[in-house]
Image 1 (cartoon, rainbow, N blue to C red):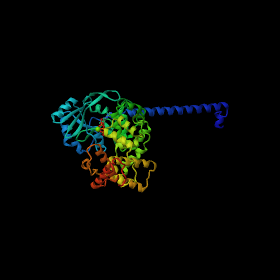
Image 2: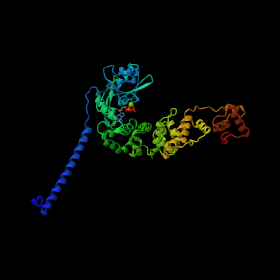
Image 3: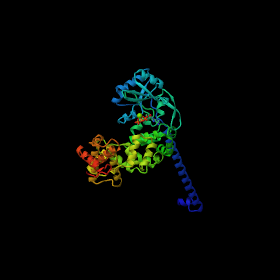
Image 4: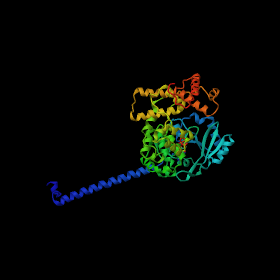
Length: 488
Ligand code: ATP
Ligand code: MG
């Protein structure tokens, strides 16, 4: 007897049985899949919440670097630890030293309350400036160097911009209020590293991970979203958790609540960085710039310029510059650039520079003659000429990524000349004009300007005699403002 006959599968009832069993099996598979997905989700959350708590002891050893034992630093530590309380390096300097990168500012944390910090420093003959005393920060100034000293604290309440704080003597509590795991590390001057949130491991893997719950940490301080991208761009940090990155992106609109100064400081650091992982493009694509700098319409020009100024050329001290790069990033004219610069509360010099770069006084070109270049260098100064040349060169690289060898060489020659430019003065002064019988007044400056324009158009090569001859001709012909003839 065949099995089909035995189970009556060929009968109508048998077919129903098979269909029923099949459906049950399918339902079982679906339920199993759902259960596994739920389990995976739960595991992910647990992993996120799981914080490896290291013993209060030392978690690592930092090779002692000269800055850690410099006399000024030692003097500050001696003052802060006089009464037996502990002080440690914290934040960026520990992180950067572990990464074997040059350190920026030196931040120090102490168990002493801020008022005591001021007294202890003063007793040791160190100037103490209460730069943010309500948040526990005192700046020590010693031999022209500054050290930010912050009392251990935890944030009691926050509104996305500012925090109300409470002081503590617990190092772990202080670490918990910091932004990313690699920024929670602290170290003593003998190189002992303390790590309460697995920061060393994340640093080793170049992973950026929020301390605590990402949604809460972002709500406490919106700046952390920009700092997230900053550390991607500057240190090449990679996303540890996709959902943290997504949470940052989803909250981008809240960046508008930050003060212009805080946005500016982070933005300039990002724009001036090595832009690792092409973080600036990621920010653009994820709508970050739409909130903080809507003038960004594309990032290709910025990318080409960054490649030129940091990798492709080695000329004089030409290197990355945040304002020049900002000019390549925003799509606007002179007036628009000025508005951007004012909105970001840039310095007066930076406002002027950005504005002029978006309304160029000179059309840079590789075929610029030597005389024209010298004239431009004299008129605009080396910085502006270099800026405009790099902007134009990189702009051409958008369309033609590989320029003709001759054009590349011409740009290099132009920049080399600009980088080596020493300003020269016009060989005549107002007094020379007065000596020729022109009474002091507007006519003197008019003539001076005219001779200067002629001198520049000739590449600033005319000597004093030639300038005086030109001046006399202008006085005799009663001309002054005539446009100079090139090469005269
Ligand atoms: P750098 O000084 O190289 O720019 P940094 O990480 O030291 O980088 P600072 O602004 O000097 O940045 O801050 C010092 C430390 O204070 C940080 O490392 C971090 O631990 C903490 N910190 C700074 N800003 C925040 C923030 N917005 N939220 C939480 N912690 C922060
Ligand atoms: Mg710092």
